[in-house]
Image (cartoon, rainbow, N blue to C red; front, side):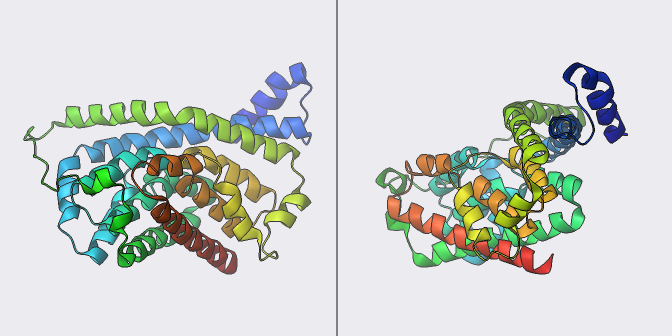
Length: 322
């Protein structure tokens, strides 16, 4: 139904004004944009509203205290899982990362959260499910959590707390006071869902529109043979190249997924495109700039290197099995 509406809107209503024809580059780009924009926006609003209701059950203070008392391995699993229900981009996850450190959560555990939150959150999973199907979403969930957990464990084992900035290390470790606000009513929980939509979607939608626009341009104008040649399965260097290409960029899952959809439609390999997506969301250059206020350069370099290796392994696995 949505595809029929986008086709009518593109070629029957707008087409005569801009000379848009089926099969033309501009026509296909406009159709992609008009089809994907309402589909992705509706999916995003539904998921964010649902998670806003879920978040009404979760206290940030209780979450920090909960993670602070767990051993390294279990704490990494819990922190990475927590990242699934926090729909943050990499930069907006940093303040909560700092809060975890100040509450005494081990360094490796906090890194598992920092990696998982932008890369394997519910928005990314819902959009992957809607755009690429449940098998891709499930495999992405498993491998993404694996990267977050393994990277956090590796960083924790290295014992690099001395590479935190001095002001972070000097913070007194203590329990956060728990505020007793009572149990919210269902009306208040639904209101929390609406507020969550306003906050998250209000912050994300420009990136989403920009990503769909870029995806539309790729869909309409990039030759399929060229994209398959650069990001196909046969080139061993395609996955590392995609990771390096994604690091200087900055977006969130909602903004980058339409680009991934367009790349796949042009013949790019699934593992290569998802490695690109992971590097954009979990290793963005702006995130590194913000982290510099908290971490010394050595720890930032270790973090980036460990996560990059994990992302490349995910890309190779996807290309091998799908």
